[in-house]
Image (cartoon, rainbow, N blue to C red; front, side, top):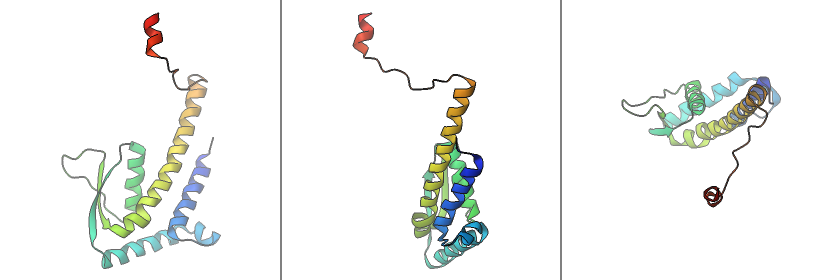
Length: 146
């Protein structure tokens, strides 16, 4: 199973990739990478109008990750009254969304899902029963014959 520290390290590396960090020193300086990304966002906001984007994130963990990622960049995610709890709205330049925010979210979300799946499988195997495989698929015609 992947450790929490290893997951955090992977997440930092993904963040560094999207921040454009080129050396190990830059990768360790997460604050500097974040500052560069915020500066890019500010530049794009000045040069490009912010567009209202709507994201539907049905998984609670993905939604929490996306909200935290937005807030880390100084963005203010919101939801309109009467919108579903799974909807997240944010006003950002299209290029920042397409080139930075969404690709970074997808990469981080993939790692988070992988980690949560491993933890869940381990807990089920250790605390409930070792076999947590899918149910056997049976042809309905065979069921009627009994």
